[in-house]
Length: 122
Ligand SMILES: [Zn+2]
Image (cartoon, rainbow, N blue to C red; front, side):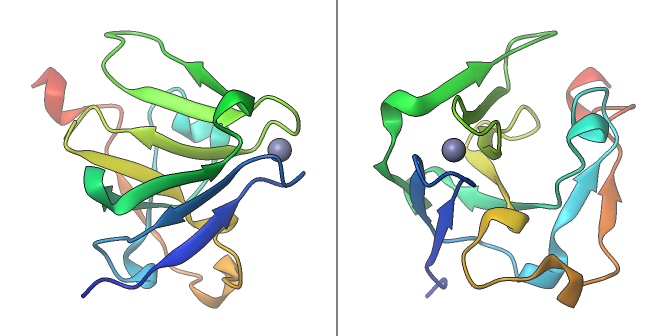
């Protein structure tokens, strides 16, 4: 049974409940043109493992390139909360740094996904 976490943006307008399929220490960053700017370590969550508790109307969607991935962030404070993954549309990626009660500095050695050579482009 996956652990359940509450995820929130900075201003509190948006809150999600998530059940990551990975351990927190297995979060990864991505070096694609978008994620390298965002810089967040991310965890994979199955589609049925994410519920928007509040702030659905505060979420803004950003898409680019193939428009497959759907990146959401809070329209008030700008914090990235989650995205529908392009490499696996059956999963979301979530912002580890936005999990309540979790300090990313407890996991100093995050790996990287190769977003420059994206699996969907090979
Ligand atoms: Zn916010």
